[in-house]
Length: 524
Picture 1 (cartoon, helix red, strand yellow):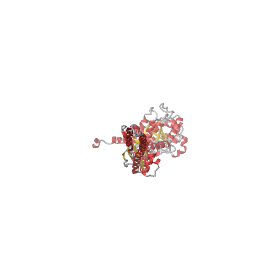
Picture 2 (cartoon, rainbow, N blue to C red):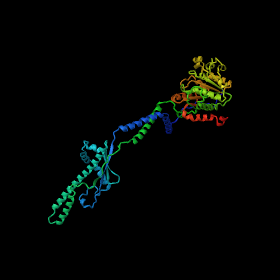
Picture 3 (tube, helix red, strand yellow):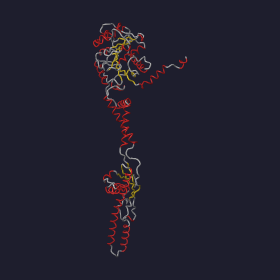
Picture 4 (tube, rainbow, N blue to C red):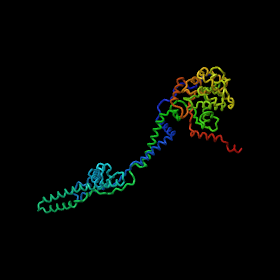
């Protein structure tokens, strides 16, 4: 048998380089979609916890009262004796900020505490009250917060009244001092200074008129109304925040799960990890992946996928005088290699090719049972030279004589491991060439675990690795490709088993529509 120069041999099978952030994002979004039930459960629990916290957490209410800072004209003779009054020309911003600072003093808090008749300490009251200028105006806002809405309004009003009381008391201190000063000046005048005495008397009358009067620069503009809604974060804020936290938590859990779970879940993991093409995407059938799928009418998408694989196999045969030899293997057992070998063979037969299907899986031979083929001699006897290929092959009648099967006989199991060596395998392929076979397909044990069948991989033209979604392990696949690489074997590609029904539903529908009789056919 001549060596195909196009056969891929010995190169790095694992894809090198770092994964980009965009590809990682796509990968985890794909994982989130695959595990949408887990994501939904995490988000539901998080949002539920947020709503529960909102319902159980103590509510707080904020009430607001307003103080008005009045400007005292400098020309008013009644207040000329009091240049330090608020609003006496200090400027809008400065006067309002001064009042805001006075509201938050212990002196005002002590007065409010007496008004409220509360046991709360002065520092405790100051913690729940805040005062600030209201924009570019003469208004000062006093905000009080309390678990009780009524209590919040009472505290805000108490601080507003306490502020006017404290500032009025300070004003009276000034008035008393001014009256005493004017009285002293008047008494010091000579009796003959009649005009000066009259002027001092007029000033004294104006100042005395202010005794007991409130501070004219500060007024209660608006009393606090009892708040109707709590000011703690409402459900309109809690729910979206809990939703975002739930999504972030679900993303982290999915990412951690991905790191701990090394099974293949989508074909993107294969293209990112291995420098091998995906030759076919086989959907999981309703009855699984075992047995003949190509002839099942209710598995149209899976059958069509094997026919696509057939086309990829047919183009590999360049030398029409010799058969093309193929090996289907996997990293671990029960990953669809036997099904792929069997259905690829049948798909090739459908297209008119002659195929020799060899059951070389001496650990778990299934080809004969799947096809109902049995023989007294099989692959082991042929490889050991104890029987000829012509005598040992079985030709199932339903394939028109184009499919020949070399089964694994029960009594050959004890000697199977020793029978597989390079020379006998090459002789088997050459014997198949004498029978005008177009393709020789081997079903071998999983080479990721059993190295006894490696001689087959070194002899055949093409090696196909089957990978099953949700079952195949990425570390086991890396071991398999490393083993093949050490023997200079580069697989032709990967057959991916596990495309979802959702992905292939449009294909099945199109195929059913194409195969349905037209109106003209029904009429005839």
